Image 1 (cartoon, rainbow, N blue to C red):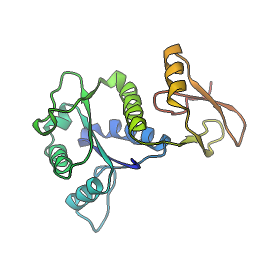
Image 2: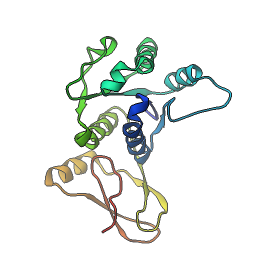
Image 3: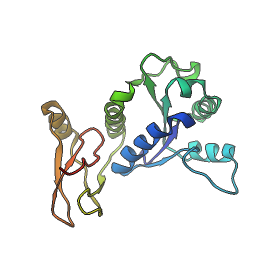
Length: 188
């Protein structure tokens, strides 16, 4: 069962990591990254070790900065060494580091990153059961949970080019959700 995901990324890719963190939050998965989490009494190496060892999966964001980052490569080494499931998000035009060069990748560009996030969520759904969706209503700001839309319906909506629709249980306004990431779209 996948409940916690470690996000490995360079500091320059923090915006992409936050987008991934939000997408994982929406499908009720906890995420951890040593760049996004800080503590006063633990070193960065202890945070990395704790985060990877206590996660069920490691998603690595590999842009040119990520591939050149010693820290990202160390995180990959620890993930491989502890036999973690590794899902590489690889920016088009880049090459996987040697330790994970045998793995299939999810390719992306800055313009298609949300598509890649949708593939990550779909892959995780195929490996584990995801029951709940967390949504923050763009109308009233309340946070609610509801059952996650079945993958077959998500696929259908994607093919049709529409959004998923739901209703806020607080203000009862209709909410349009991006079918890739389950994030609410801004109200018109």
